[in-house]
Amino acid sequence: MRPVEIFDSTLRDGAQARKIAFTVVDKLNIVRALDRFGVRYIEAGNPTSNPKDMEFFERAKGLRLERAELVAFGSTHHRSHAPETDPLCQKLLEAGTDTVAIFGKASRFQAEVILGVTAEENLRMIRDTLRFFREKGRAVFFDAEHFFDGFAADEDYAFEVLRTAKEAGASRLVLCDTNGGTFPEEMAAAVRKAAERFGDIIGVHCHDDIGCAVAGSIAAVRAGAVQVQGTFLGFGERCGNANLSAIIPSLQLKLGLSCVPPESLPELTAVARYIGEVSNVVPAPGLPYVGRGAFAHKGGMHIAAVEKCPASFEHIDPAAVGNEREMLLSEMSGRASLLRKVHGIAPWLEKESPETAKLMDMLKRLEHEGYQFESATASFELCVLGALGLFRAPYSVELFKIIGERMDSGVSRLSSALVKVRVDERTEITAAEGEGPVNALDCALRKALEVFYPAVCGIHLIDYKVRVMEPGRATAAKVRVLIETTDGAQTWTTVGVSTDIINASFQALTDSVDYKLYLMSKTENLQLGG
Image: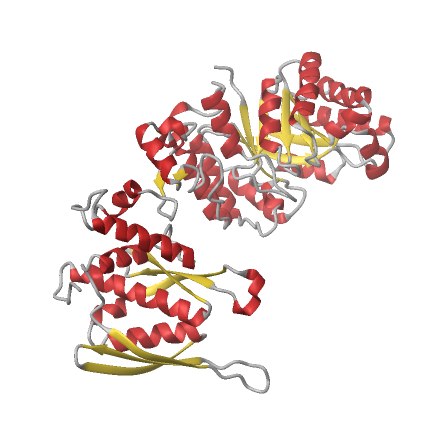
């Protein structure tokens, strides 16, 4: 298998994305994860740009990496300094990495107009900087910034930059699609020419401004690139960088190239999600290979086909990258999908049972009204249990009332809620305050029910989401509320839908309590049946 080096820039280029801010501890943790996974190079920051990156490199000197090598990133020396006296070059040396990545302009326009130097000065700065680091015992990767723009405008000068960098000691010439606007076939043509002229030292660094960073990176490898740079979830400045969590399995599983140790590939999904968690980024469900929806099937005919032969709608086995197949339940699902979901509740149901048809009709009607059960599995279970007469809540809510106040100063006071519940012949009326009406309702409902069911005091909400489903209707729009609840041992999600956000929230709230009571009913003496 031909090896392809993976150069991860999550901690440097990825940190330039909106809302990304790594602490030093975050960076150290991500380095450990990438090292265990088998990434070859980790570009961990620019020690010349901020004190935090310099602190990171100081602390990283104590790391014992098994597979990866840290790389410090910086620019060619300033035109007014020789490398020996340039303070930025000195900081790069102090980072203490065996390899440095130096960027310089590969475009005559960028050198003359943006950097403000002549084309010859630009070549000298590249040559002198790379020679300086080579003489200091560092391996040097040269990032040819704006290469593809420069190549399109002046091919001879772009190649003269690469020739200068190679003669100065660069062991990798990395062609950068800095503005992210190059199409894959254009990239492949330029990479092929560069590889033919300079040999097996070409790398590629793509941005995703036209959505082609992954495709361009793969095309570059097929044209002769031996190193691919990117970020693990594709985040980065503007539209992001090439997504390594898509590139690595594509190269390794599809093209038979060696990017990471074979035993590491099934850890891909776990590593991607871990990096997302540390970065405070929620990976999109549709992210290739590692997204939670990457192998999710919803259409009834699709599900039936996947059950017969997974390859009919899956390009790889999800387990190969550590992901899982998911069969989603919706109005597009068939009876077989429904039976799979309710098997644990009603194992006696068959495809032709009247109850199955009844459940299908109920599901389609509710989803037409705006309910979504893909995430709200607790509400789905309660609907099935109710329709089959297997469980009903042992209480009823006879009324609830919300009171909100706002002072003349514009400062809102705590909201308050009053709830009246009935259990058999007994009623309980309870009031509570909260940070907003939904919080007040939640507190009042549980406070009333705790009189009858003390275990209710042990549950609390951990997430609350609202989605407007009819944006064109403005404040009269229907909304869907999802609530995630936990009792410390289990976590469940419920849903409510209404044109009134309070009513939708209360539906989801009562479902969250009902599900807890249902769980209790399996072991305690709560009222069951219809």
